[in-house]
Image (cartoon, rainbow, N blue to C red):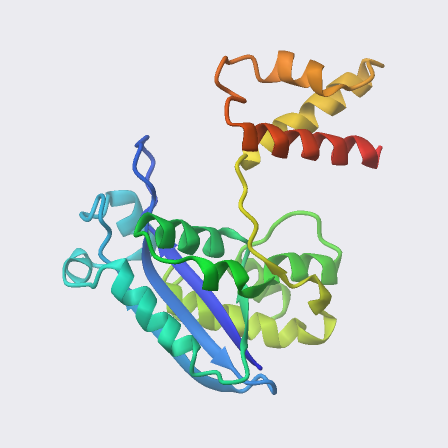
Length: 250
């Protein structure tokens, strides 16, 4: 089995829009079972929406607009990436820094009406969480922060997909023997966001401090008062399950 260290960049922005933030770059490094370098993949993607990069993302990534202008669209790039992944005849384990990369790829796969079965069935390991567990850390750290933690020298450009994948591969090698690969996983759709889940935790903490027994009904009434806040039954069920899990920890 090969290890695929994957990183993506997406067309982020600091303004509101109904359109999704699309993947604009995929970078990946292939390591064999002995953690030896076997190859790499790198491609830019021209997004459907906001194909002119905004100043925020241009400054963050340094991706030239002229390179985006001549880049292929997502369907062609993701097909090429799949073909590259399939060169590993004994299968792959994808490694990401956090869960955002898989989420963004699957979002764009679905937006372009491409079959998502491969990506939903793909096994991946969240290396960020692996590092946090291995070193007993409670707060997320960046790739650059992890490089410093392991005494590694950063290289390339931060927030370029291939360079970030290469640095993440260095971290992976450094922490490999401390990782619990039993925590490898498959992507699971989420319908709530981090802010909403944090709100649930805040609500439980506030009620407990006031010696009020936390109930979902109280959380929904006082912390999600907007009429449509819990209109999606999938989000409602997910937050109710999250509430139950958090209460169960007390």
